Amino acid sequence: MAPPQGQMRPGRQLAVLGFIFVVLYLLVFFSGASGSLKDRLEPKLGLDLIGGTRMTLEATNSVDGKPPTAENLEEARQIIESRVNAFGVAEAEVVTEGNRNIVISLPGENRDLTDVGSAAELRFRKVLKGADGSGTAAVPPPAATPAPSGSPAPSGSATPTPSGSAAPKVTSSPSGGQGGMAPASPSATPTPSASASATPSAAPSASEEPVPASIEEQRKAVEQKVGAPAWQAATGLQAPADLTADPSLADKLKPFGTLSPQEVAVLPAQMQFNVPTIGCAQLDKRPPASISDPKQQVVSCEDGASKYLLDQAKVEGTDVDDADAVLDQTNAWVVSLDFSGDGQGKWTALTREAFNNEGQACDATALGQDGKCRVAVVLDNEIVSSPEIQGVLTGNSQITGNFTQKDASALASQLRYGALPVTFEPQESQNVTATLGASHLRAGLLAAGIGMLLVIIYAFFYYRLLGSVIFLSLILSALLVFGALVVLGRQIGFTLTLAGIAGMIVSLGVAADSFVIYFERLKDEIREGRSPRSAVPRAWMRARRTIISANAITLLSAVVLYVVSVGTVKGFAFALGLATVLDLVVVFLFRHPIMTMFARTRAFLSPRVSGLGRALPARTQQQTQPRNPRAKEA
Image (tube, rainbow, N blue to C red; front, side, top):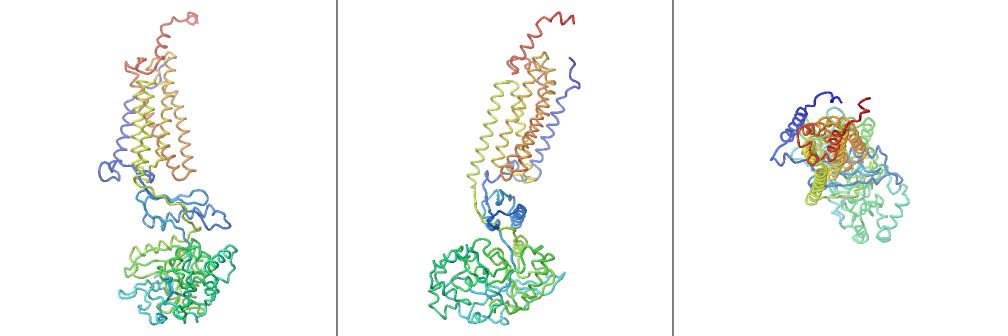
């Protein structure tokens, strides 16, 4: 029998493995690392190991009860992820789950993700009327209503003076357009009075639109709850009730103050606006999509103090192309607002309608500081801003005012990411405390340690000296995996979860299989009469293909699972694939070279020490038997 071609030099392969370890742990200690030794050796852990927040959002406005399309769901996921990043929430994971859920996971501190993950729809609506939104049973005297020209605020300049009103203004971008808009401050919003009721409304009431049967049934339930006198009194109002002129009306309308936000949402828009006991505390908490219909007049609040009757939405969030917080020529923070091609035309038409107050649709209570109509930027159920239109905007616009960088960035984020293609409602919010996370981590590490210990005990019991090869190989694999987790956590943000630990435990079984394949093949070679030294390379050549095939199948399974799965299952697949790849590295650069070195020792020839069992005695007996003379003659 000819020896295997090529001389095995185990020292070179071990040197390559040592070089890999040196490079890996140099990255661990010095690449993007800071702090103490413990901090440098700490991998990035998932929320189930260190605590954190997890929220599930479910689509609620799908047509006819059907879930949203996959395209809309993915677009919503990207927008929510952008909103999470824009609010400064780092290391968050936003994934889709099923055909109507989006899951937001944030490892680390427990944080309130309600505002970050809440879905919203952006609408631009002209302000028709204004009223007090406190929900109290009485309103201030009519004398609080200022004339448009008597506003104490400064004139509509592009940039407010430091001594002027704190209300921001919106002007045209220097690159194009003309005019602007300036929101009135809450203090400048006039309260309804008798003059308000005399002002006609140019647009039809929302209650005149066809009402779905389900909404009508809910309205009847609300009517029974508040009672016939209260309902009749509210239906007869043509403007916000002046309770100072008719104190008895306050008692009749008082039951509306006890309605829940869900019950208020089904009332006609005129009733929501005219009944003074319906306040912003109820309106702001209405269910998502309560005022999402762009063809309906709606009621919404600003700053939780003033409520407004708003016209139909002439411009929607999908018409906004971009919004950014920038510094203008005076080094003041402004919000630059860009519209799409079709959106720019809609925006120009809306600003023309508001600037000219066509049809006198805007009530005196809705006019801004310069006597012009205002346009409310409505995000979900609340008004983000209600600027006064100061001209016909034919190009890009700027919202200016006494903004800080934080305020301008927050408003730009709401404008940019507010228009979700579907509306979501929070279904589940889970906060994992640091104590529970530490308990999960201890349990996971204990399970991994027990699994490795059982493999090592079995290896020493069955293979004896060869068990030391298994022991050292598992230790080296664990060190490689640990170093890789630390580096990957810093470079690509990979977080180790409880599912990831489970994937590594499963990889122990894959590693044990490769040992069994190699060692059993080595026994077969010795039984066939080869010496231990020559059996090692031949056993490796024949076992290598099987080992590679088995690991390739495991790796392929991990890749497929990673591609098609979401959430924590991805962590399981990634950890399993990573451990499998590094196990192959240890197989080629440590296990085979160290076996070659062991084959040259005297202990390797001892059946009791080496763990080769009956293979060596069988070979010795085969060598001592007389050869068949017929075979010799042949």
